[in-house]
Image (cartoon, rainbow, N blue to C red; front, side, top):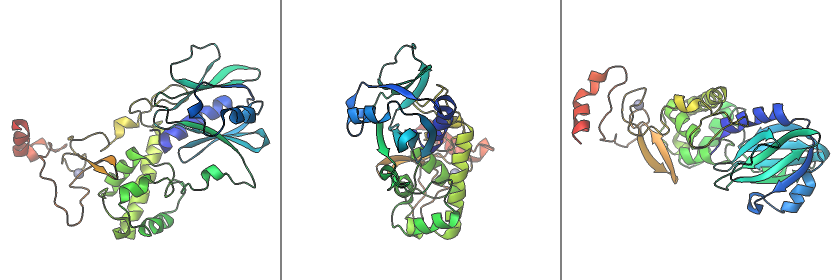
Length: 302
Ligand SMILES: [Zn+2]
């Protein structure tokens, strides 16, 4: 699923390509990709000019003339394409937006059909669709972050994924930041001290900024608005690396379900207080392969 860095990358790409264009025709091929009435969405956005393209959490916001905001949530596999109007229509294209006096189209493609388009009229600077979203992880201060975490009594990983708690973080960046901060994904949020939470706040910001610089993580189908893949998948330290050595200590990365989601972590760098370190075989130490050599033998024999 596209998370904050991927959505931010898409938004930056769209901003250059569709700002100041005016919608002419809107076609929706799959009703379920529209939240609310399909006709109402079409009527509300056509003939309106795109004033700005913004991101809030994992939502893309197209602010249109007349105070109308078109929201796009990409779900699991949604993509936005800005292509010439005569380009072949890709399979799973569910909505097509054409522009006045401009040959390009904005197309919404979504094979798994979890993405949604919806609209709202902004009243008094408020948007109902965003009212329950938590703060942006790149804007919240370390102190506020720490206070919010400690006020909850939940496991830290599912808490980071809760969009009402923090907007934009998903499975990849929760796992990566918990590893950098040395926190087990099952640690109870209220048991974490301020110092370690400052470390987590810093790790989250670093991971998100590094990924934005790399134009996101391309696992599965993610590409940006220009069709380009991201590069952060090459910099992942734990996510998707089950059984590979931890880059810090050489211990094999584990994968467990936490809060119903696959979680990747290092059992040595991210210890659970009172918990035992897994007895799984260790992978070779990255800088000193001989360090775990007897264990490597065990691993080969298994
Ligand atoms: Zn480690």
